[in-house]
Length: 272
Length: 272
Image 1 (cartoon, chains in turn green, red):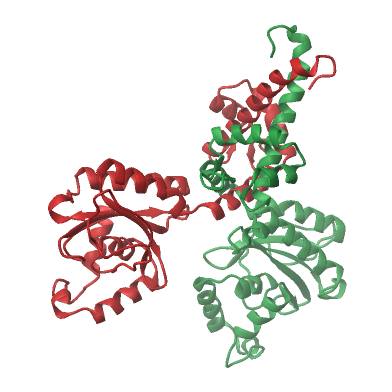
Image 2 (image 1 turned 180 degrees about the vertical axis):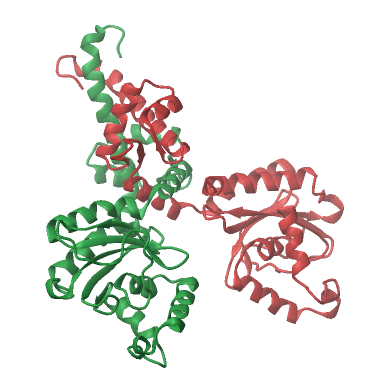
């Protein structure tokens, strides 16, 4: 706000400038992160396509705020401790359920499939969100259902990609309790190995009638910033009316939505 | 910049406002992180002591930038994916050596002690930065020296606080190679346990003549955002002229500097 101009005249311009300035500040901050968290003024100015003198003023504000720091030697700028605290708080807010929920609606609307999000619970992969189309497939799974690690597409995603001793223990317990017919479908010498290798090779799991008779399902992993599987996104349908081909539209959509959710949780950028 | 006012008149005001606005934006961002990464407009405005209408304009800019997101249900604001990416880039820049280096100068200047930073190398705790006063103590350690996990204060910090199988393996190897006299100073039934418990209880390690005859040392852990020991800050001197008391000024200074370095690496905020 200026002392000379009347408030009425000053306010609109002030507002516009302030918002512009905040957006420029955010753009500089994001550019510094894109450049790996450390860069020269020249490189930063080029990245945001602004004059170095202007970018320098913004960096001064961010250094003041502790969000950016300057190396004494190279005088390069780097992200400072406050940027780290902001990221840690953002991680605590990163929730696979929230980020993947819109995907359930899209899958239901666009493909007319029953779909759900499962996370690893203490009893196994557990459905936490569930969407079904107007004419639902009759399946006995719902929110709260714990899925088989050995026979369901959802479970196999965790079995193959969730590098955790508890998952293996639960899978072996399930194996002990399985009937001879079910066990017969697995390699007696190495019952889990082939299932895990298949998921790791494909990056998703597809089952046809293995878990529920007459039901096919496609499941893809949701990764967090640390590269751990924090959820699974699954679509299912009656084996007759559900395209379960690895290169079919349903598998493609489920994989694309799971990748997008992982990206929002920081997965892509977690690998420098 | 305005179209009416002459550039010369507009520039200083514009610059001041832009920097102010960038700083306000950063303050709102830091406030959202302080509030746990998620808050209502009312709570945020109170936290930064600004009018909600003004804070709302800044939040709009940050949503535009993907740094902040708004929950559909509660309409609360939370840190978005871009904030997470910024934090991940900041973590890649968080370096125990860089953040602790100024501490070495302060310890040398203020206490006249020889001091160094060590990190865990593949052979054991390895000195990576070393500072000594004008009249140095003659010690046979320098940059590149690998410190004993069993007998040095630096090594005991890693032995007691670095929860890693490799540290234990290296310590047991060192124990096998130790002479009878040295081994005699340890509990034959549980040679490592008492050393580890002592460091865990004290939060630092103090040795007198155990590693180098006539030399005392105080070492404190530097933690990263994940709560792992990523370095040790150590001060040493001749046993005669070095105050190695746990409540003495040297131990207090080394602990305070190690805590400050850990904080800059995100340690404090890593524990919600």
